[in-house]
Length: 91
Image (cartoon, rainbow, N blue to C red; front, side, top):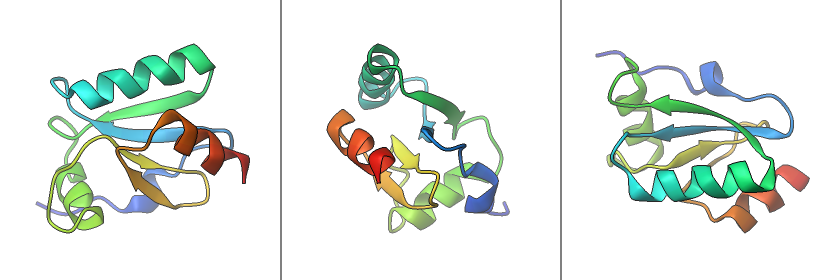
C-alpha cells in the first residue's frame, strides 16, 4: 500500500486533522473535548482511508498510534491533550 502524503491532510487555520479509529477511547475523549471547546477538526479513520495507516506509522516510528493530530503548520502530535491542541493552534 502506498503511504498517503501528509500534505493531503493539512487542515485550515484554527482547526486540526485527527487520525483515529472507531474503537479508540483516547480519540473519543479528544473529540468530545474539541467539540466542547469549539475547535474544528476533520476526522480520518485509518482503518477505512487508504494510505493513512502507513502515514500514521511513518509519523509514529512504526506504530499506528491514534489519535495522531496534524496542525495547520504541518506539525504533528500523538495523543495530545486539549491544552496541547489549544497551545499549538494559538501559535
